[in-house]
Amino acid sequence: MQVKSTVFPFRKSQFARYIPAVIILFLTGCEKPEEYVAVPDYFPVTAGTYRIYAVDEAIYSTGNKEPKTASWFEKEEITYSKTDSNGVSECLIAHSTRVKPTDYWQKTKEYKAFVSIDKVMQNKDNELITSLVFPYSPAAKWDAFSHFAMNDEDPRYGHLFRYENLDQPQQIDSLYFPNTLKVNERTDTTGPVIYRLGYKYYAAGVGLVMDVQTDYDYLQNNGDLVGDRIIDKGVRRIRKIIGYGVRK
Image (cartoon, rainbow, N blue to C red; front, side, top):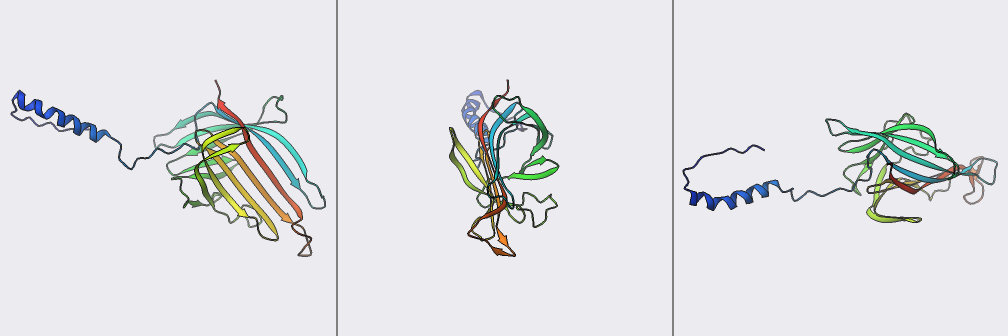
C-alpha cells in the first residue's frame, strides 16, 4: 500500500499531537472487513495427509435372492500439492486397498483434485466430477456430472447435488467431528419401481468421512411389480472413515 507524504510546517509540539491519530488510521485500514468470515476447509489438500476407510458392499443380481457381500479397506493419501498463480490448488491422490487390516496396502490408482475459487473437481477414472461448490449454502444446487456423457439409465442421471446440515457435528462410529456438512446427491426412495439414495459427509480439516451409495431396481414381471419392493438388482456401498492423519 502506497501512502503519499505531504510536508507541513508543523512544530514538534503540533506533530506529536497527530501521531496517535495517524496510528489509529493505519491500524483501522489494516483490519479485515466486517463481512469477512472464516470458512471451514472441508477439502484440505495438504501433502502427506491421508484417510482410511472401511467399505461394505452388497450386490443384488436378478435371480438371486441374497446379495453378494464384500468388505475391504481403502486409503487415500495426498502425495503432492501445489497452487498456481491463479490460486487454483492441485493435488495428486494415491488410492490403495487391502482386504484385512494386517495386509499390505496395494496402490490401485492415482487421481487429481483441483480446488479453485468456486468449486472442487476430481478427475477419477477419467471422469471429471464437481464434488463441492463455493460458497457453502443450503441454496446451492449443481450438476456434478455435467462433464459426463451420461444416459437416463445411469442411476445418477438427472439429480442435482445440494448441501444439507452445514457445519453440524457428526459421530461416525468411534470418531467425532465437530463440523461437518452433508452433500445430498440423490433422494428418490418412495417410488414403487426404484430406490435411489446417495450422500456424502465431509468434515472440516479432514475431508470425506462418509459415502453412502444405494441404487435398487425392484422386481417386476412383464412390467408389473412382484411383491412389495422386492429388490431385483442393485448395489449398496458404504464407506466410513476409521482413521486419518499426516504421514511423517
